[in-house]
Image 1 (cartoon, rainbow, N blue to C red):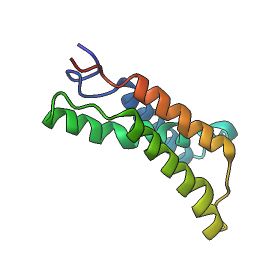
Image 2: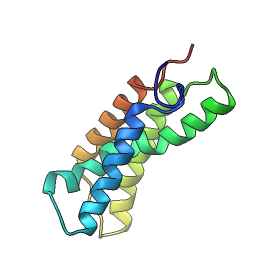
Image 3: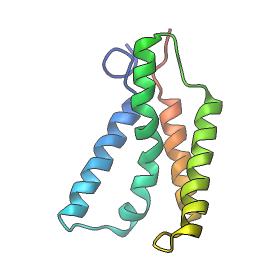
Length: 118
């Protein structure tokens, strides 16, 4: 059986969700690490945001799998919005090319580990 919960949940989604939530708790408790604060959230974003809807779609349509092209387009839109558009309209945010790499690595990890449907 691939994935968690009978092929419906990508393990990268589960790990990313746990890492993201743990990081938010640590920030709330006042624990801060520069590298984690800068790059963990972008790394976890794609697996978390695509993981749950993908599992839902696979539940409804058991043979369904998110195409690579959709993952790529979603990741590009995410990067453009949060690393180009938002920093240009809100001075509280900055653009960081390393965040784009983190989005891409998260997308690749999630997509390569998406449960293999037979």
